[in-house]
Image (cartoon, rainbow, N blue to C red; front, side):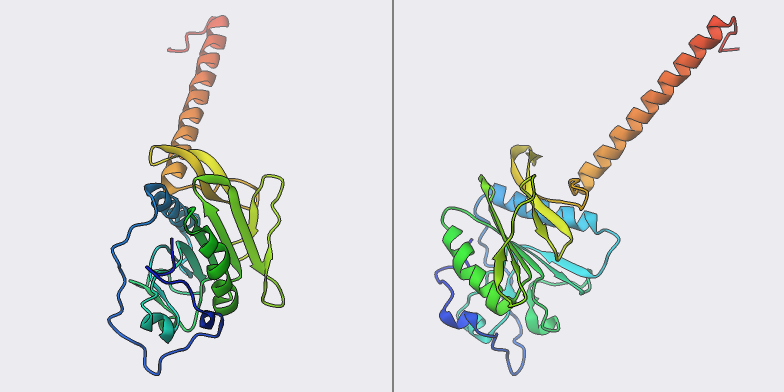
Length: 251
C-alpha cells in the first residue's frame, strides 16, 4: 500500500509535524481504494480482531487499520491521507468513535506500534520512506513489515535510546518481540477465511498463539467435548467395575 495515490514522502516529512492554528474540519476518511488483495485485507482484520479479543478486558487503547492518519498541515495540503495498514495507540479511550486518527484531536498521540502489509510494489516505500517517517516524525517505538505472500519477509525495528530504529532479532521460532504490546509477532500457517496461508499473528509471552474470538470459542467447545468424553469413559469404567462385583449399575 502506498502512502498517497501518486506521491511519495518529501524530505520535510522527516521534520516535526506542522500543526494547524485551528484544527481542520470535514476531513475525508475514505478514498474508496481497497487494500492490495483480499489476503491483505484478511491479514489486517486478523491482527485487529485478535488483539481486540486478547485485550477484551481493556479500554485504554485504540487499534485501527487502513484508515486515514492526519499529522501535519503539509500532509493535508498535499492530500497525502493514507495511514498504516495496522496501528495501535496506547493510553486512549478504546470506545471513542473515530472515522480517522488526527493527532491534534488525540492529545498529540502517535501510534505505539505500526505494521505495514507489503506487496512487491510497496516494499521499497514501506522499508525506506515510511520507515523514515515513523522513526523521525511519529517516533513510533515498534515498526514491522510483512508480505502476506512471502513468509520470510517479516522484519521489525525498535527505537533505541537515541530515537533511531534498530533491527529486531528473531527468537528460535522466528518471532519478533513487540515491546509496546508485550507480545511476539510471528508467522503462523493456517486457514483464515477458508484460505490456507502464512498469516502474521501475535503470540503471548508463553509462546501461545493469540486467538480470534471464534478460535477461542471453538477451542472451548473442543475442550468441553473432550471433558464430556472423559466423564463418559469414567462412568463406563465404573459401571463395568460394578458389574464385575455383581452389582447392577442401573439399579
